Length: 291
Image (tube, rainbow, N blue to C red; front, side, top):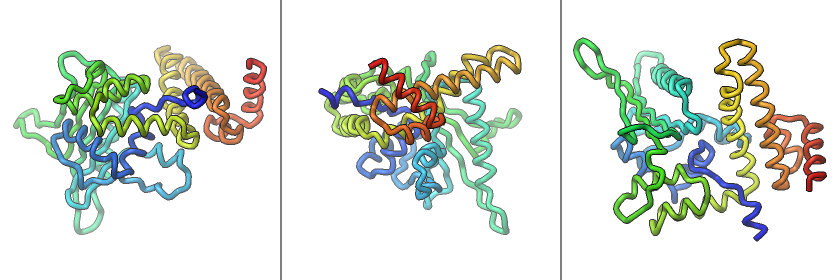
């Protein structure tokens, strides 16, 4: 019973979670099925590119961009997990694709250009279509520019779908919308690959080391969204600054308290939440009084 109470919910819609699964061969088929459904391309030969894999700083490693590369084809696949999608986020994603294109040009006599494919997993609902693909095209000749393409997946359109034996891809995407382990299991049904994912998510929910990294990512993303809600629509520079600062502060406190309640040491909480050790100790004392 105590184990269940301490288990945090780990969502699939997370860079941290995606990287964890994709680095383990036993789970790669699950994500390969999803990605093939989106871009109509088999990516069994692709690997996760992580140039900071051995840095020793797990928080930084898991925040790196999600890039899939292969030594067999000149293609880079970029994946974005947008839990708080907005026009600003989409604009940033497009700029990132342009940046990847620029970096794919190697200087020297042999210039080699890679095609960039961007996949955006968006936690939003969209009318009429659940996923869309976008390409650049010349307005005069209607000729497609084949250097890159963007694929948008509107995950909330898949919410409510349960595996019925004949809808594997849609059910897998529905897993990204779940808010509890019970819902995850309802969606997975009797699909063995999906149930393996759910089992591992539940195990990760009890892994404090993974939880610190996961919570750190959630904190970073929530801070951005909170700041936008607090001040970015104000229209004034001071409103933006105040919204950013206040939003950041509140999220740091929330994450710190969550970690402390799970027994994480004040030192680790301080490093993860961006608060001083004095501030963390003060929060710990507050929690003890509340208890």
